Length: 116
Image (cartoon, rainbow, N blue to C red; front, side, top):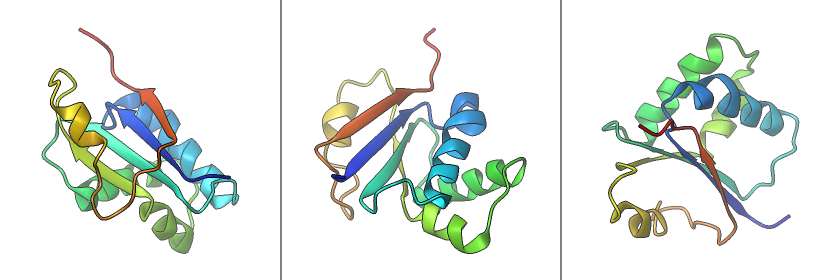
């Protein structure tokens, strides 16, 4: 399978916390995600990759059975992009993010954000 980047808009919200991230972790733990699969969390919080990984760790430990080595491997897939959904300049910048990890031309978007 080709590399893929999965972008979660509203990555700090309940849909990401309760459904998306636990499901992605379970898929990764089962070996169902390709090695080039990346997850980019898009949110307004002033976080970096490390802060988001810490939050995801807390979320997963609250109800998802995890294994330390597999959890660390999953975290290597996670990146956080700090921006506001209403800022049109955020989207071109997202296409070039993260600089240290090539973003696949194959993108999947999930909108875990309620309008309004």
